[in-house]
Image (cartoon, rainbow, N blue to C red; front, side):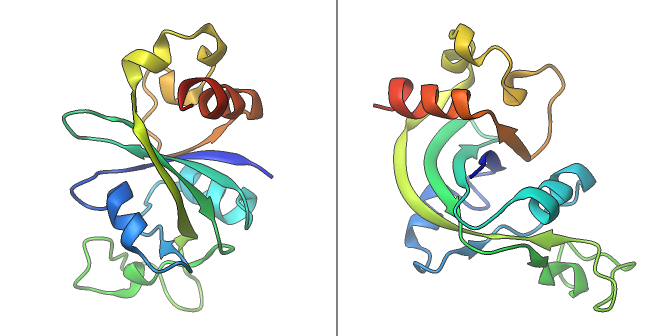
Length: 153
């Protein structure tokens, strides 16, 4: 099992939206960064655990927990010319973008960047690295354990 942090803008898709989604999960579509895509395509597996992070908002931070509930499959938005995620170079025979489905596990208190930075145990967390803008990043098992057992309890 692996652990991930997945960012979403809450005005686009929030932890509350995920909580209302069907139990089978909701597609994590619209990722248009190759490294983030590769994480979903090559490393994410059903059962992997997710820190759901609200980004680009007044109070960014970890807002809940989720889990990956499907393997990667082609992101349908790449084929839709009306979608802001449309990619004219993508074809059904050769899709460029994928998504996984994630399922709601639970809502947490908002755990912001300032609080995360206070803990030496999280000093190496990719989210906290200068210039990190990836929407999906791996989380070290020790970081996951510290966050879920010390900070969110």
